[in-house]
Amino acid sequence: MPANLLEDRNYTIIIARSDGSRDPQHPFYEEWVEAQASLIDLAKKCQEFDSDGITVYEASTPMWKYKKSNVARLAEILQRQNTEPDAAKPTAINLAEPLTTAFSDYFQLKTKAAGKQGAIIVVVLDEKPENGAAIAEILVSAANKIDKDEEIGVSFIQIGDDLKTQKFLIDLDTNLQVQGAKFDIVDAKFWHEIKRSSVVQFLIGAIND
Image (cartoon, rainbow, N blue to C red):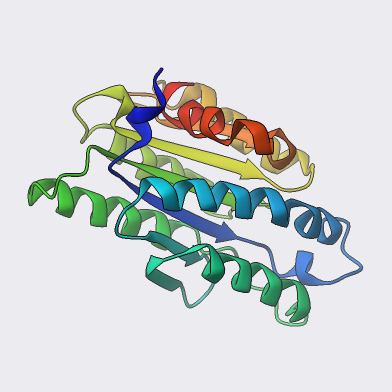
């Protein structure tokens, strides 16, 4: 699949980090630190393809949305999360809201014929959201609104090796059409599968795997 298929798209990155993993004693804390360079490389490539800036979300409560954003904003978020742990006030990952908003924004642009040929949404997480069924419903709904398989790609990147999270992502990756989706729009990988020399291939995988 040619790399030019990645051009003229909406690019969104959702950081869905559990509060517990912001504690330096948490087993996934170091994984977030190690993943930061790869995530920034990924954001740089997304920024190259999105002329009006990427959109970055923090899947927290409340949700934070940064429109027309850039790599510097993502780096600031990741660094802040590493240095300002909030493990004393645990809250569930709020993934449904930013995912719904990202899809809504894209379909509004599509209706206005704004020139975008599709969207790629990257979700970075270390823990399965409590409302996993709702996440699947949101993805199925979006998949049923598009005209072709490669129009939207949602790439889930897992930080750490939590088995419940892995099982949840594998289910989304392999069974979305079983749950009623017209197209399979989900791709799931571990963060270390993002290699600096193959970021383009990784993004193509979001709309082709």
